[in-house]
Image: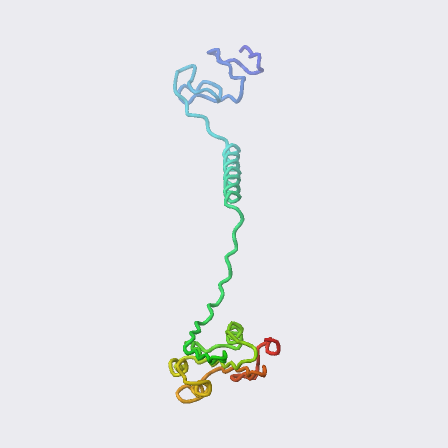
Length: 201
C-alpha cells in the first residue's frame, strides 16, 4: 500500500489518512480523517466534531474573567460607597408657655415638654434664653402632665406675682428651675448637677 508524504498510509480510495487521527466511517467502515464531515468513500454525513474538555474549561474561565472585569468596572463607575449618617436622637420639643417681662427687663419664663428633660437639654435651653446682666431672670420647666403657667404668668401685674405663680399649685411641680438675681448669683433647682458653664454665663 503506498505511503503518504505525511507519513501515513493512503487508503485504497486514495484518501489521505496521515493528517491527524484516523477513524473509521460508521457507514462503510473505511478509514477517514477525524476532521472529515462527509465520508469520501460513501458520502455519508458524519457527526460534528466533539468539543474537547480542555476547550470547554477554557471557555468557562474566559467567561468568568469577562464577567469579573465588567462587574469591577460597574462598581468603579458607581463610585465609593457613601457612608450613611448615623441617626441621631431627636431632641424633645420644648414649648415656651408663659413669658413675663418687666419694664426693667426682669424676666420670668415657663416651658413645657411632653418628655422629662435631662440636665444637658435644660442647659442647652438656658444658653439660648435672653438673660440681661443686672436683671432678674427665672426659668421654670415642666414635663408630662404637670401644667406650666401660661396667661397667669404672661399677664401677671408685677414681678412678685409672676414669681409666685411659678410656685403656686397647680404650677408648683416643675422639674427644673433656674434663676439669676441682679447681682449675678445663680440658683439651679432640680438636681445636684449644674451646667458646665455655670460660673461664666
